[in-house]
Image 1 (cartoon, rainbow, N blue to C red):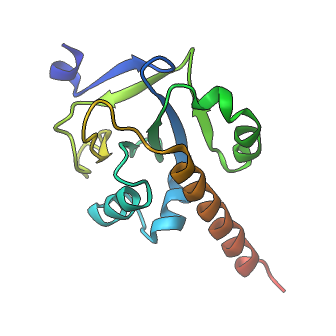
Image 2 (image 1 turned 90 degrees about the vertical axis):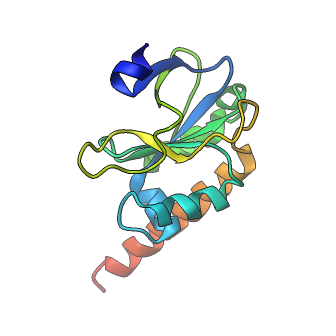
Amino acid sequence: MEWQEHGITLLPLGTLFSAVRLPQRLVLAVTGGTGPSPEVDAVLGKALGGGPVICDPHGHRYYALVPASMPTTWHQAVDDWRVVDVDCLGRDAYLGVPRVDLTSFDQRTYASYWAVPMPSMATLCAPIAVARLIAVGWHQLIERADEERPA
């Protein structure tokens, strides 16, 4: 009912799937984009092997859907990633999940959408692919900061 009325609903995390929250600046550092776009979504889809990703343009964040066990198994890595505003959300967290037909960025509404649509209910992002994306993005952000620092 919420999907019909609002286009989005809150779903609990940690049972069927969890989510890795990725700041937009990290995603854009990897994809070379300047904001949500079909080009950014395509690169993100390729980098994550077609695993599902939700974009929240209002919050300037992306959410890669991952196996439910990931928050507990990646505890140490997540602590390190918080420096760049990456977090792994599991039990006791909820995620705003858009209707399945919301698959493109709408500049009028800035509504959440599926940057990489879920190909099937059983398909999630591979944790190693998400870790690689984070590592590349982190490296790119550090490199840019070094380039911008006065000599």
